[in-house]
Image (cartoon, rainbow, N blue to C red):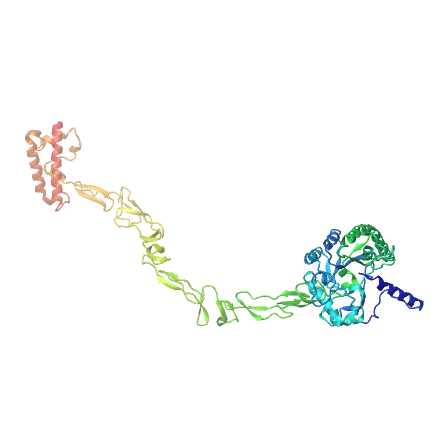
Length: 584
């Protein structure tokens, strides 16, 4: 920034005013006037005198230079956040304003990195011309074009402006305040780093590098840095002006590496421009994201809320959404949440409390005639052929006749069976029937067949599916001519002994027949039986057969077909007698 001639004129005017007893000002500005509530640009400069003692705010003008990222990175590593006032023509070529320099290669990447390092990008006009010499249209264009160029890198509530050469007056302020550019805070001035004629007590870095210090002298980064330190120690607080001029950034970086460690050692602290009290109070409050307007940055400092929220105790809360099964009885407004009320039980969603207000139906219901009716339940012996939906009721179809419940029409689709059947591999199978002479050890169930067991000896069951076998007890009926036994089906059975009557007719002593020692004498005493086998066998047989035939139905209790049994028994008895004779 070549301001040597401008400042020389200022100082000369100050000396003249002092001689007349008037307080001189180092800046040429109109007298300050009261700002309107809408005005953002002040008619006088904004400086850093509101900062606490030994507190500094670093600023860099005229960039972005090709090596500005190095300055940005060094400050970041030192924990210092600064503001870079950039010139629009270094970022993009102007389509309406005269420009004197070329676009800096890679300007977008440089600005991105500066912002990522925690610094602010600010507006320094487009062509670096003295705004006080321009038409109102050009003044607005100078700020507007650069505003467009830096928009991707700025924070909307931290828009700062510094006038080229520091040239400013009431006309420029009023012009910008009447335009959309009134969103900026400015003009931001400086407290240190702008003097070219007070070395070694002060210096301007750009003049040190370009031989434009007093006497057209050039100074090294170390020499210039010492002059900066002297001015800072004298002023003690405020905004420090430096530059990242194309081709001279390394000098400025080298100077920073000299003054920053020294200032830290001497107890100085660093803030960003937006933290300078006189600037901070002019910046629009950055409301919490939940607020539409606010009194402060906190979530509990909202004045009003965006759509879809309501304000309660300074906090904006999202309006409630009525859940399924309820409807909006009262809508959310600026200060009251949504009021929800329950739908009729038949509704999943609704517009009101009645059963006829359903929009969609609850589970298990279908829309019918304006209400949500319960879906039909398929009864026993049928299955769901088509599920119930919002638009159609359940469709039921018949199971196979063997099934009580089923999943389909086939006999293999059974789910359960009726009485007398059990389920096996999806089919209903008829339960086994335990026949007479057996009993049901385990009854047929829905899934397991009947288990049958035979009656134990001495017991019987006369009917099918008997739950138990009954004991026969003592089957002796007192008749010596019957054979008594327990049959598993018939119980006690009395079978006539076909030989009993024949033996009686032949005079056989029943008691003697059991004694082998007396049997021979007994046999010999019987007519036709006592002879030997060779001579009397035939007569014995004829006698036995005759006796059996003659007895007819009178043998035991036999009758009808039992005559044949008696005959067979008689023959068997003859054979017994012959064996006895042979043995004798």
